[in-house]
Image (cartoon, rainbow, N blue to C red; front, side, top):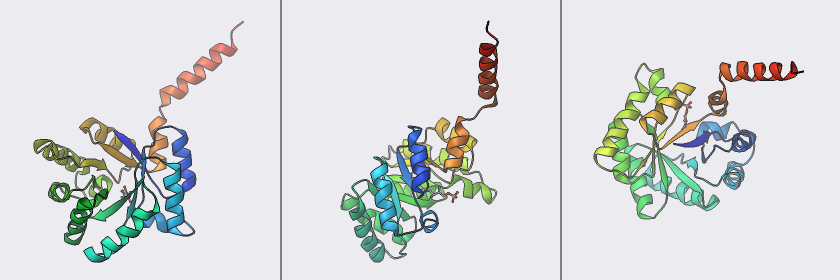
Length: 213
Ligand code: E4P
């Protein structure tokens, strides 16, 4: 499973990169809005830092304007990919971008049917939002499992990117189901490393070593 960082903060991205585990970055308008300065400069900086795909979302809601934004977004760097919400206009946009050879990440996916349509339109990545489904009392991970099954049934080439990952168990379950990628906030990435037995074991090794005669 590829690991992407869900952040637009360059310091967080550098911190995650130093762990050697990050293969891409996902941003969204909310994440970019938190950062000071020109968003294109921020994205350019992120794309220099990370070799893999960096998702940048369109803000327009109609296909013509989405495509105009996408034209600007892809000029920022060769590894930028266009994030498009799965609406009727978004699907049209993904289909046109596929014809133009532009990589896309279909975002705000909350059902297997939306995922199937995004895959048919030619999205490179399809991003089901696990945490937001859990927030409304649904089982986000079940949606990942269903999408994985459907994509396997029909040999669909779109990659499933588990998004809105809120804790380490989401990450683990996504990996167990065979999700192609998961995007995680830095806090979750750091939590993945932690285990109390590692800390206890390390403390014991150090104590035993310092008691050595
Ligand atoms: C994914 O691409 C989104 O940016 C992200 O995972 C949303 O996560 P949230 O529901 O925690 O905001």
